[in-house]
Length: 552
Image 1 (cartoon, rainbow, N blue to C red):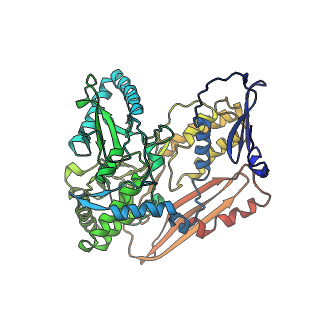
Image 2: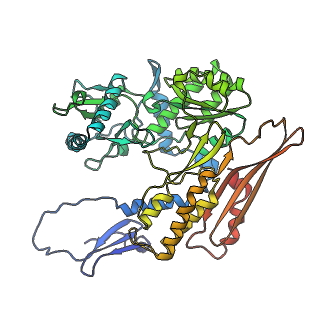
Image 3: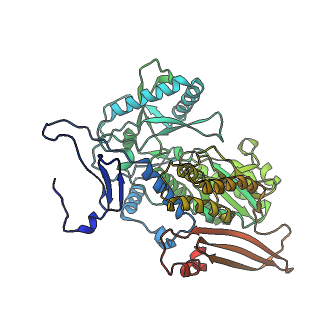
């Protein structure tokens, strides 16, 4: 065995050790990664061996845990978040140089890491995954029917087409495995998800694509602006990713196998997607870029408020906007539909807390009176706690939907990490659950070990109280009804810290010309104190929660 880098001992300091029985190898994690050491069988005889690498589920759980610790307070300043890396600049250059407007839609190249890279022929992987899909669909006729309808819809709408010439001039021909994903909130529908992360010979489509700049607005910012004025409107872009086309030559990297008309008795044929995919690492950036260009390219035809609404009041494909009067809302809704149609986007599922505004929208374009604000930018998830907008009462409410999970570190983390409270309106409640998770980490229990009786009791007690949050409501608009002309506005920030954690909340104090005063909770934040903390760290909590840091 050859050891490289022994002159840099800090690179080999064990960060974590995982051992088996006394006669088994053990794994050591250093700054260079994981290494396995220990006895092997007789090495005098030459034998062939297969080596397989898989990312441990425990590693993924640890990443999920770290994400939960850092969700509430974003320590990055705004300038740092908005700055672009060299890769982001390269992706943006690709978007700028390749952007075309064709048949009512924008068309963009895929932002490749290396334009000259050659991708291996992964057709065998696609066939193997298709066989797995065939067995799954054969067991569920209803799923087969819905999945076939979804693929057929792609073809009929021009989002996909059959490949008639298998040979291609492109050096990046790639076949994407695909599978169905259902959402309990959308019964009767199934989404076709293309596995852009599927690897063949160490390469996947996502590994060859640049992610691109983050053009997404802050969800907290969008929600706070949504609460500014008394008249609220909301809408959704239908199939947003599929409204942005992909450059023709790049479509060969988006091939997939499917049976004609879903008939699994026939030989599968080759198709290719012509649009940006849900699941491709570059799709959020490319589609957001096309949306922004729709607004800027047509800015001369619309009022600044219409253009700014597209740029500042969308989170992914959801539009959330508040204005001062019904008339402004009706005009804005019409202008937004007109503007986005120029980019090939259709705004639908309209909602408003004002009847006149709703009646100005065609009935086929309206949504129901409850809007789920628990947006997920990935696959559909079941939220243990989610936020909803009750349109009729014009209130923000909480929806509790608990699923059965084992009382282990794994099961508890699954529930706690599914809590969605972006404004931190019930942060004191969710902090208690995070403290339970932290305490289990402190005890160094394995992910699936039974937890101590004391912690079990505390966890069950927290679960029993969670449904009471459904009775909690917060007024959407900061201004109460019949509030007059705004005379004065103040932000009041309260913060505190302890050995358990630290938190802050912001209230908005408004005064009108009649000296009527209204106070509203804007947002709250909380974070657990680190398991390993320095002596003076508690004294720094107040400094960390200073007004500039929290408001950003």
